[in-house]
Length: 271
Length: 265
Image (tube, rainbow over all chains, first blue to last red; front, side, top):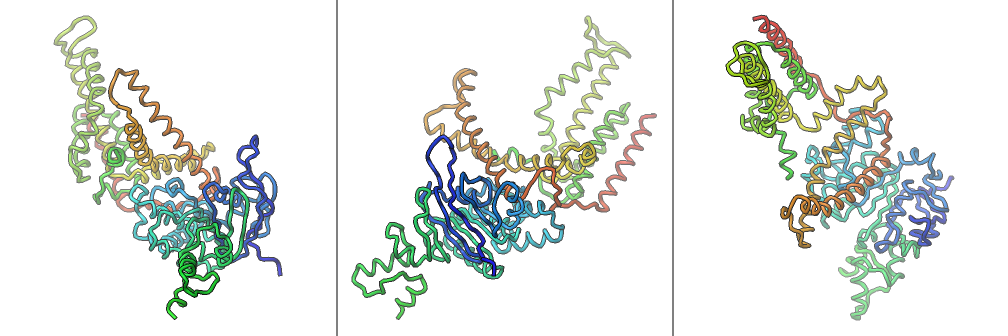
């Protein structure tokens, strides 16, 4: 059985300015197994977005290597690799290429030279997932920031990639729609065995991941299941459920002394 | 500010709105060319009648068309005056050196005026009834033959549609920067022309900087989504030729015949 790593990052180093000794990423290594949801967290300037750009081959690492589906990412292979990989960036305005919502979602499909019918099916399907189908004829000036983020997500969904990278792509959504969208994404992920990497500041979103990677000043300081990460790394702001558990523990409630997901906590509280 | 740029298109469902943008663009260019083949007053009367009929068909108020002429009125009057006062022939009513007023001059002045006004009216019909994006598609279609000369029409069309797409963004940004500078105490619209121009620098520089950043991010997104210049792409928007387009072209042929006939009168 071949190893099922969707992404393998080996000792990558990167700096924007070669004259300075300031590395945005230094000696970062990790693996992401196929079909998993991985959250990357870290403060501003910790190198999260740079890492995303390296993964899709927009920036070359200074040293070290990145493998996507066991294929080395380099100048020759990146075109081929990008067919299996989709990325949604932070600013939804600067990634809106089409004149209308549906044109924008179709942009990547046109590049893949899909047939007219196939494109229309995929665009409709993707827009329905992000709940923007009825806005398909609108132009970007008529949309809110959150709506533009949904369109950007639909643009990647329509490409049907094996790996999706979200670089703080849900920040402009209100909490309810964020939760709904994350749920739909989890469904799609399970259905098509997708690998998802989500860069986020939202601890509650990170708590849903299979694995959390913590970056600090360009270094990977810890990785593991959210349960371990949030229980061990006291410096990190924990997700809501963990924060509540700790507060209850300090208040003298005899709550189990280990990380609990939101569901577990609710079950425990209702006992 | 947004209305200024995007307000050109009036939504509607008239015959003209529904026409294929290629038909409309072709017909507009054709009628403009036809204006230069008209040789007598009857021809112009015919074209005035036809143009007003077309304008009426759009269901858009006459004011919108008159507004199209307004910014150009001085240019038109200048050209007309040149024609009137420097054309000799026929009965000369008045003469002072090279300047003269003749019956021939008056007639050519009227022709020039009519050509200008009709040209603006007919192209206004096009811009008022066609969305910018459809117009881009039409330009793309009409330029297609240039591909023989290895000119990349797809890149050009994409460039055109991206620029159209970013006009509202740039306007918004300009407003924001102007407000930000005002909040820092800059007063616009005061002082002599040099001082006023200097005050534009703190608006133009951040605007350039942010546009470059935008362009860079956009290029990254396009690259990641697999765009390559010169590469073959399929098209999500497809124009469909319909019966009404054939009808419109038939009318153009009839109009040509009518102009040829009237020219002989």
